Amino acid sequence: MQKKRILVVDDEDDIRELVSYNLLRDGYTVDSAVSGEKALKIIKKKIPDLILLDLMLPGIDGLETARRLKNDSSTNSIPIIILTAKGEEADIVTGLELGADDYVTKPFSPRILNARVKALLRRKEKKDDFIKIFDLELDHGRREIKVCGRPVELTFSQFQLLHFLIKRPGWVFTRTQIIDAVQGDDYAVTDRSVDVQMVSLRKKLGTYGKYIETVRGVGYRFREKP
Image (cartoon, rainbow, N blue to C red; front, top):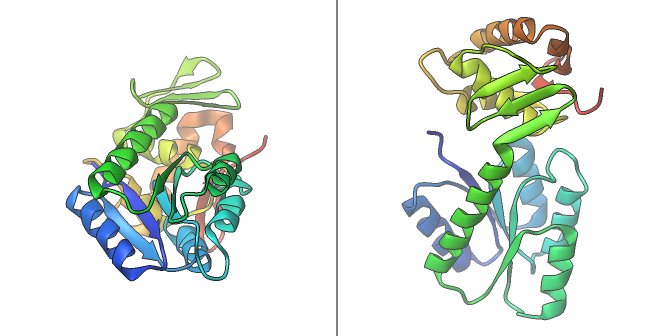
């Protein structure tokens, strides 16, 4: 199973390193950033499964970073836990109103923070278990895909690939990101084999294969609108 990727955004070296260390020990892949600007750049290249976001950041602060992420359809589904040293109710309320999913006030227990991360990721996985877009239904728990109510047989890798794309419609994924996300005995291991998988997947989806779009020079995306 692919490790969950967490992005830790905090300008305090001690806090960032402590949080990263404990997440790594729990089996997560961890990226880190010292500012909102750097966090946004990282997210464009590596999509995290969850973001730990300090509110007091230089330049673009945590609230503005959260606002930009939640106003972008390609990133608004990423869970965010805000970190605040102030403990002020107004900051917490504003963060939650912007779309943050949870908060932790500094100083905090690393064990409690990791428990919050695990719980939020579990809720996110449950939400992603069943996805319906247009006339296409994907049930991750049952590993079933239906088009206009008709079941479609996909290989393990094709199912993983479609699930990866459909979770964030409109987001462009590079072939490298797709290779990292798709696993199994028949999973794609080269850029060329990703293209072959896409051709086969589109064919199996019939007319709905057109919603998987090639972005020349970059990769692929699942169309956001009909």
